[in-house]
Each structure stands twice: as C-alpha cells, then as structure tokens.
Image (cartoon, rainbow, N blue to C red):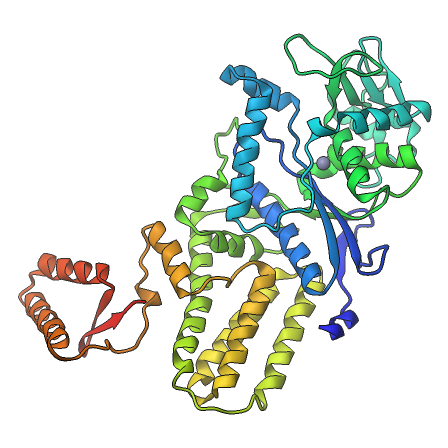
Length: 495
Ligand SMILES: [Zn+2]
C-alpha cells in the first residue's frame, strides 16, 4: 500500500479553475463536505450521478489510506418542501421525513458510502442563529424591517470568486430572488421571517426559519471546522448556493472556507434539463427497477464527472452489458481455477502491477473513471486470452486485482449467485452467467435429460417451435440452459 504515497492526486478545483494537486491540510486526514438533497421529492438520476461521482472519490481516498471525515447534509426545511406540503395537505415535516427515508433507501441501494455525519438543517437552528449573529456583528448582514435577515453581498469583496459572476451582471441578469426588503437585489436571505402556517423557530429577530445557504456553512463548520479540504455538489449549485456559502463562511471567520471545490456535471434528458414543468424527471427508484445498482454506477462513471450526460436507456443497457462482460470473465476464470496447474506468479506479477499503477494513475488524474474502466476491461481481456495458460495463483491474482480495483468504483463486488439474483429480480436473462461445466449427471438422470433434448430437437425439426420453446423455458427454470448451435443443442447448468 505504501508506494501509493508517491501517487499525486490531481483534481479540478472550481475555485482556481484548474487541475491541482490535492493536498489535505492535515497530512492524510481529509475533511469533506457534499451538499445533500433537499427532501421535497424522490431523488432523480442527476442526483444519483453526483453522489456516485463523489462516492468514487471518497472510496479512492480511503483506498489510498486517507482518513476521510465525510459530511453530507439533508435540507429538510425550504420553500419547495413547504410548497409540496401545501399541495399534499400534510406538514412540511412529514414531506421531509418521507423523502429523507427514500433518499436513505436509494443511497443504500446505490452502495454510497454512508457519510460520517448526515446532519439536517432543522437540527442545527442554534448553530445557524449563532453564525447569523456573527455576520451581523461583523457588519456583513442586516435585519430588514419585516424581520428577514440578509447577507450584504456588496460588503464581501470577493463575492463571485467561485462562479465568476460579477455583481453588476447579476443584477442586470436578474438571476436573483426579488424582495422589497433587500437593500441590494443580489443580497440573499440568511433568515426568513415567519409566514402564517409555516414552520418557525424563535430567534433574536423574531420567529422564522433559516434561508437555504446558511445551513451548509453552519453544519460544515460544526462538524469539520472553519476550513475544510474539499466541498462538492452538482454543477447547478456553483451559483448561487456555493458562492453564498463561501461569502457567509469567509465573512464570518476571515478564513478560507473550502480549499477545493468539486462539481459534478448535470444529467439532461433529450438535451433538456430535468424539471417538473417539462415532466422529464427520471427518478432513481424507477431506474433501479430495471437496472441494478452496479449498472447505474457503471453508467454514471463511464463519462468523466465534469462532463454532462444525456440520459438514455440505451446507455444503461450498454453499461450493463459492459459490466456483465467483466463479471463473466471473473466467473469463468474462477470456474477454471480448479483445473489450472499449480505455479508461481512469475511474469504476471509485473503485468498486474503495471495495470494497477495505470488504474490508480487514471483516478489520480482528475478522477478519470472512463480510463479506469477501460483498464479493467484490458485486464479482463488479458485474463480471458491467457486463461488456459495460467497457473492457479496467476488466475487468482487476476481475479483479486479486478475485484480490488472494481471495489474502488463500487462495482464487481458481487459473486455469481448475487449477480444472478440481481438479474432475476428484474426479470432478466441469466443464461450468460451459467457455468460451462458439463452437467454432472449419471445414469438415468442424464439419459432422461438427453431424451428430452432429443425430443425437443425433433420438435424443432418439425417446426413445432412453441412446444420446443416451452421445454427450453421450463428447463431454464430448473437451472438447465439449452443453447441451439449448428452442431446441435448443448446444455449448461446454472449455479
Ligand atoms: Zn449546500
């Protein structure tokens, strides 16, 4: 493991707009924060992609021996949650609970590494109030006549340093929420005065609730300290959310808030942004009905994390095929292991080390997951090609490496039974996972099976295909796979 110390991780930093060496402040300890969901609806495939991308980065760091303290929040109070509650005729707390649970479920299914802490905004009202008080005391915020508290962007000279947005352009472009209570149209709410029927908490400025941005600053600082190593989110959060997080955090502490900013590209559907009004939102739970988690992960990372992805079922099908081809190589090799001769690792040791280095270098180079996947396929191809010539220990070393590197991406973590189970759950053909061993049958059982196969061949000759197909389907359910080839019908047995 130790030679990985030589590996320099390079990552694109939205703040400096370049790929830089990633060096945590405290040696091998990484403080990471990622903006979690606003729990007002089911998580969609764009969210999944963002979480998966960051998950791979976290897994990679952990693999290299970093101690990662990872915080991902849940926004459980927000205008959208309140609007949804009104629509459904339930309380905003119930809306938040329902979708938070759904998010946990989806996160678990997608095999996202659980954060060390998953704080919720409503659990941190005192911390939020403290932070707003600090901003008021330092002259960066003001209380409006209606009880709202706003951040005064003109006081923070570096406003716009993350997104490159200029204050003047912002105002002209009107990408901001208008309010008669603001001094400057670009100012943003830290605290919103209570409106009738909305959840609210006591504060020095009257009852109300936090604005969206302040919670992330308050929670990141509470669990990670005033300066964190890496902060991430979807690209749509760069402005205004992350710009505002920087402004309010750095105005309050006078210190750099996050040293690296990691942003994940968006997922579009037919080149359009997913949105309620277009009705084109693809929920993760629906995709999970048709594709297993590892396929979704493969799909998400086969494109570089900063590039946009246009969602299509075709891509998911291809991802599934590609992933399964890796699995089939592993399963076949494992099956052959028993027949392989004993022997040393020999030259294969260096071959495998080279692949491993190439793979880790790909991930070190701004998390180049498409390249990392291509290397997995190269390893698998080489294993397939050489299989019959390799010794037991060599085959085992190939399989171990594929599993080990796949694990950094959160794929290739299933055994044959689990993979078959995932497929069967979704009504998919599992025959490609069948073992190629000849049926271990003797005597009557074997004779009977051969008789059935011969009868079926006769049916096919007479073009009675429906009956022939029925026999094949019923045998398949018993775990016996028939395959019609030019040389006749062959059978295989699934585990
Ligand atoms: Zn956030």
